[in-house]
Amino acid sequence: MRSKVIILALFLMATSCTRQPADADAASAAHDTLTAADQVALADALTPVSDASSDALAGDVSSTDSSGPSVYELMGKKPGIKMFLDVFFKEMAWSPVLNFYLPTADSAQMAQLKIHMTDVLAIIWGCSECGYAGNLDMAAVHKGVLIADGEWNAFTGLCFEVMNEELLLPNETIIAAVKALEVYKGQVVDTTSLYARFGGRTKVRKVVGQLFTKYIQADPQLKARFAGAPQPALADLVTDYIAGPVLGQKYVQYKGKAPATAHAGMKITDAEMAIFLDLLGKAMDDYTVNPQAKGELLALLAKQGQALVGL
Image (cartoon, rainbow, N blue to C red; front, side, top):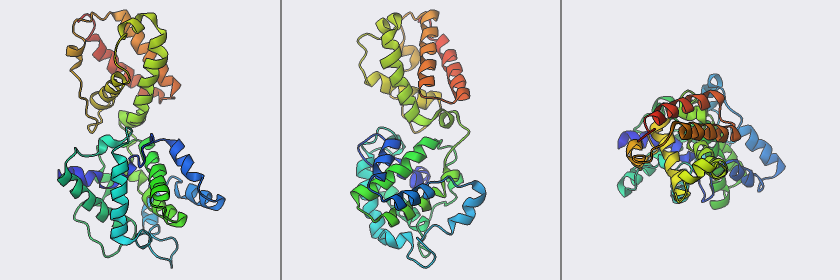
């Protein structure tokens, strides 16, 4: 349990902080409450930080200026951070985009997670006297978590939103807090796994939704195959299968049957499997999936699909 809590201690802030889907529109909506000068400041805060400069910046982002109070102080120190986390977790539970990163519903585990996150954020936001028993090497801690770039971007936009709309913090405090977190993006975001290169679970869900609503409904052969299948439950199940077992995101829990069991007796033909993969490829193109990632995923699914033909 401890290892999972430590791994999530920073990135769990990347989940949706409202009941709305976590995407760029939420961040855009939050911008509407800012002055033009504040929007420029926030855009500067969200400018990607190179790995070479992140260490140099890490010591320079915990206060709004060199003589002013630290973000830790502006956030209200640990009581303020705890208040932020209380609101955050309540809203996070509603997010279908990234809430799979949460530990299972267990009050003791959640309480421990809040303690770890409070300590981590206190240090990140400039508390020089605060201690933390875990590992603060963010690259090492998040290795294997497979956090996609879009998931981090949802974090910066939507955590801004909860600070702005739920806690009503001053704009300068929010901007400084986001900027302090953004320094760690290069250490936290994965760029090599197929899951991350594809775009994360969010992108998988959009592609699968497009597959069912646009392409399968327009194909007479496959439309008949899926007639009566519950939607969007089936799309959610397929999403979790692709994001989890296929793309390797271990935090996505696929709760369906094994593919061979689920397709037993369906007598799927080679032609039907080929059509399905072709339509899935078109749905990927609609959402501009990385071409190499698209090819790799289709190859994996084609191999698995051959085992289902004729069952």
